[in-house]
Length: 277
Length: 277
View 1 (spheres, each protein chain N blue to C red):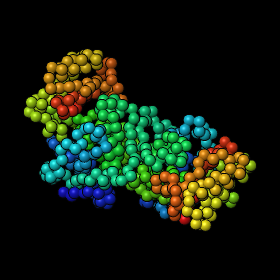
View 2: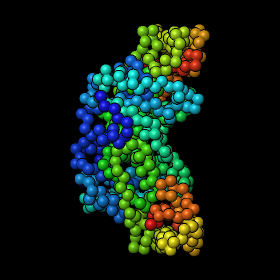
View 3: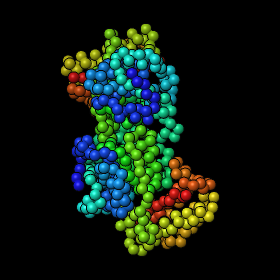
View 4: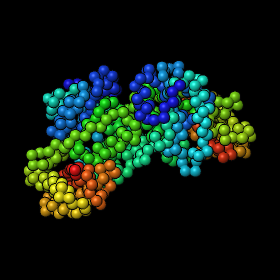
């Protein structure tokens, strides 16, 4: 497995890679969710590139940039074991050299949910993903459904800017208790981990109501909120039933609606989602 | 010569083109300056693509979008005559379909000169050029020095976003009287055309003072301004002696400094520039 640390080296290497090339963009601290993305890329592509870059521009002031887990040796061992071909792990100054000042902004869909709670977050995401796509020039790039709005933003950027790749979305990988895999789960103590299963439980409740033919999105939101409020360690940021393309809140449920939520468990902010169908 | 009108068709065709591929992005109403870009692309590339697209997002409200000359038959005849291979001329709805909402912004260098006079202009330029680069995937793209700040913005975008092409800058082509070729010159009546030569004359004055070892940028600006003020049809927007990378105004001249100006001649806003060396 080859480790690449500069954009120039990545571009040079790219010319020799067997097609198709799959890219798995990550911030490291890899878990089974990431590994599932790599497996999928391996299955569909002749070359798999995983990038590891904790992107400072998608963290807001006061967020957990400095605390974000950083375990490159463990990450590279996991990637080696799963048969990943190339790890692209540039230092921050390679991605954002002095004087860097070009930004990609996907407007509209970033006004709501995560974009509303974390202003500027998606500008950082779109910009770094755009740079990674240009540096690696993948045939396909793999993203987890866990970050549902990120998937929507990246797909919109690719379509709007005529970018030359396909976005593949891979289902969320969960712990046995339903908690969605996340690099931030390491922040949770055992009690908080248990409390955090309320996110998945509330999504399951939404799913159940949808299947029982509840048509009113607001009733589903209210039921989810009532369930989460029973958990003393949980503090709701948002609970949403939205259009899966525009991320606008729905009045009437329809198949494909995106149920999503952000909840703080202690000091740790977690997100999860489910497509209702 | 092949004419292509959709992004999908352009991308499909791109796979078969002989490398290297040169792109000349234009807004049509072609003149000798554009043709010089095509000649240069022809000399350096095995395939030359010229795009013709009057980009609405780089015009401000109240600017000349609707009046902008539109002569596609004349343009294609000129391109055919110079040996251009492919004309990419998408309709506006192909470039900006309903719901389009992703923008590329180069900050900093766009705060000054044209960016200050035409807020939002360079956001439109960077976005459409980014889209054209992704649709055509050229090896090299050709821009005229006439739009000096545009060149700076496009080069910065390519570097900051790791884009995979080289930007080639071609010297400004001028009328025998020194007036820089521009699609907007058709707006000028004979009297205005004559008055418009004051832009070039003021740049020549700057050049002369630089060669006479004038070190004080402000004295050069003042001399240019005094010369232009003698022309009754001319109204100065800005006169600048700036750093050629940051576009910040200079106190002391140094070789490579960018002398540039924007002047209204009657209702027509014209720009021109010269690198002092």
